[in-house]
Amino acid sequence: MVGLVTQKEGREYRIPQFVILSLISDQQRFLIEGAGYIFSSQKIKEGIEYEFLISEFEEPSEQIPPPELNHEFEEALFSEENQWKYKLQLYRKLEAILKKKRV
Figure 1: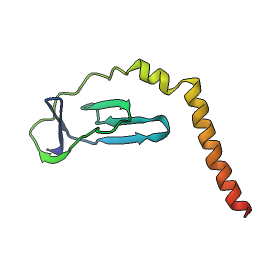
Figure 2 (figure 1 turned 90 degrees about the vertical axis):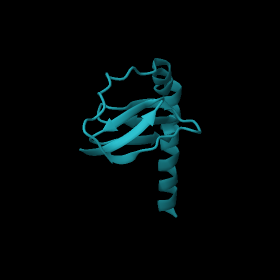
Figure 3 (figure 1 turned 90 degrees about the horizontal axis):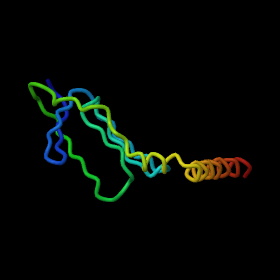
């Protein structure tokens, strides 16, 4: 089978389906999901690296158990303060669009 191969922390991940990389800047979050074969959710910081190679392999790597989320990070992410920051950011984007249309 053909799929994606990556290595992280000394472990090889052979992923037969898909990998989704998400940079959610308004939440300061980096997310990687790979069909049950790889998962990471972390605060955005400089130096996060993943290298993928399209490769042929006999068997995919063993699927990982459902992820344990970093509860402190998740709580901070969805805190009331962060929700208000997000709403204010969205308001300013919409306000800028409306101002452009008036001109």
